[in-house]
Amino acid sequence: MFARKFIDHVDTHADHLCEEFMQKIKRSDKCKELLQRVPGEDQRRTTREIYQNLTEWLLTNTNTVTEERYVSLGMRRAQQGVPLSELFWAVCATREYFWEYTERETLLEKPEDFWGGVRLLYSLNRFFDRALYFVIIGYETAAEDESGQPVAASTKK
Image (cartoon, rainbow, N blue to C red):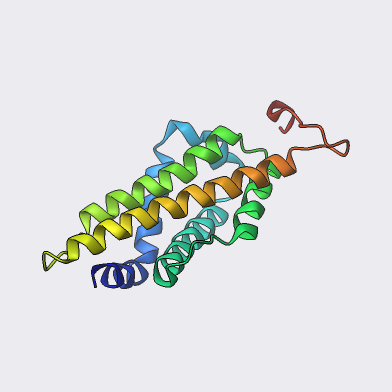
């Protein structure tokens, strides 16, 4: 099946995939504060974890994203003072880069592989939508003060 073959391919090339993504995000003007506030090794580890979680999601074909991982990520980035817009962009860029990687590394050998590829891309989108939802919940949770009122992002510097 195409999806399994692709997942194995991603697992084998995970470090390279992560490094390529890190180079791409470093060239982006939309993540300047994230790059300044989050240590490089933390960024790499998080990117690897996202791709690892994605391959687990695709292999198990479940409908659940590990909520606590992404809520925790959102909270961590809020505490580091990363603007929500940059966090959002970084997660979207992760998805976009994975799509590009998928297109570049297409492993279609038989016509029936096409439908496995379609299912793979559909699952990929569902994974990132859910991960982004939980990241934002974590960010919002960390951005509340003791009274439960939201704290303006500009005060998180």
